[in-house]
Length: 65
Image (tube, rainbow, N blue to C red; front, side):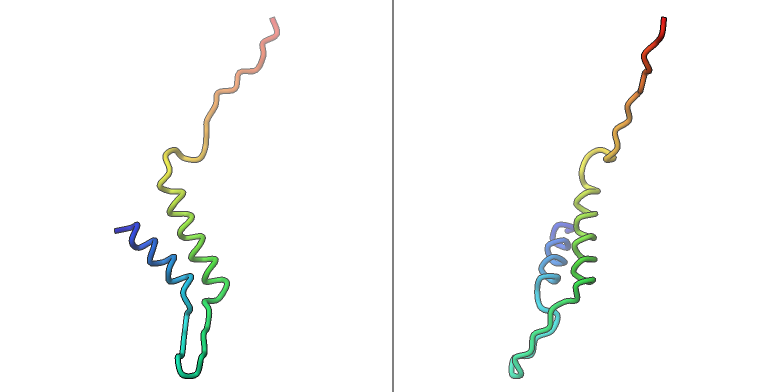
């Protein structure tokens, strides 16, 4: 279901916001709305990846014997 929702959001962001047939008027979604939709979809995609996006390593300084 979430994949269908993601596809629907992506298609709606690419489709015109408003269209009039007789008057031949087409209005595109505003740029901030398109950016917000893209950020939302990318964040959902990133959250599905395994791991936290952070790698923890133990640092051991060289010893002076």
